[in-house]
Image 1 (cartoon, rainbow, N blue to C red):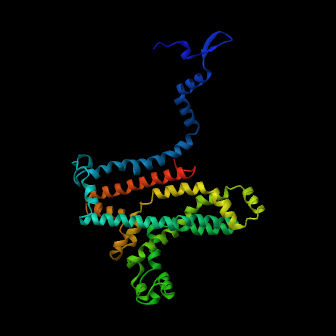
Image 2: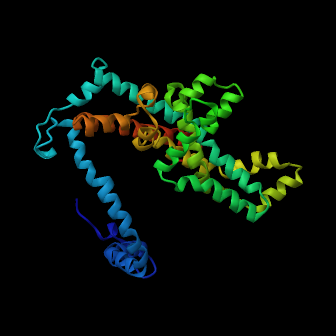
Image 3: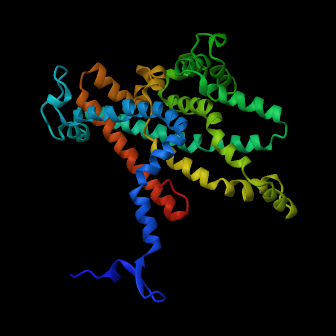
Length: 350
C-alpha cells in the first residue's frame, strides 16, 4: 500500500497546508524521553528508592531464589547432587502423594485435611474478631483508655512463638491435683465443661481440644494487631455521616450497621481476599511446639509433613511436592475469591 501525507499529517484548511497532529507530537516526545523522565523521578526521590532496596533484597533472597529448589518436585531426590544435576522423574512425587494407597500418601491427605480445617476455622472465627475490636476501639471516647486497650491487644503479636506457646501450655497444663493444673483447665473443670480426668490428662494431650486451643491462641495473638487496618478505615469516615444518621434517629448499633460497616466494606473485602490467599499457609513452628504423639491425628499439617519428610526423612522431592500442591491450591483460592468479589461488588484485589 502506498502511504500518503494525510495518513500522518493533519490538513489545515486555513493555511492550505499539512502539519503534525499536536497530540501525536506530545506522545512522540513522551515516548522519546521516557527513560529520561524515569531517571529524573528516581533522582528526585532517591531516598524513597534507597529505602526500597532492603525489601527487594529480602524478596529476592527469601521469595524468588528459593523457587529454584522447586525443581526438586520433579527430580529424583539425591542429597549428594545439586538439584540441577538430579535426574528428571516427571510427576512421580505428585503421583505418590495423590495415590491414597501408601502410608506416605495417607499421611499427606490427613495433613492436608487438618490444614484446611484449621485454616477454615481460623477464617470463620478469627477474621471477624479484628473488625469487632476496631468497632469497640471506635466507641471508646477516652483517648488514653483507648491507647491502653490497643497496646494490651497488640502485645501478644510481638511475643515470639516460643513464648506464646509456652504461655498456652502453662494455661492448659496437666496436673495430678487440681492445684497443679493450668488455670484454664482448672476453670473448665470447675464449671463442668470438661471432666476432671480430662483436665488432669492435659488438654494438649487430647486430640479433640487441639484445634480449639490452636484457633483461640491464634485469635489472642493476632486479633489486636490485625485490627489496626480496620480501625484506620473507621477513623477515616467523615463525621457528617454520623451526624446525618443521628438526625435520622439512628442509635449506636444502627450507626455501626448502616454507616460504619458499609464504609469499611471495601477494606473488609480486600483483607478477606488476602486472608483466603494464605488460608492453607499454616506455619510449622507453632504446631510443632504444641503438638505431640497423642494429638498427631488432628495436629499434623502440610508444613509439618514437609518438615518431617524433607529434613528428618531426607525425602526432599516429596516435601517439595507437598508444599507446591499446598501453594497451588492457595493460589486458586485467591483467584476464585477475587473473581467472586469482582462479580458481586465493585471491589477486588486486581
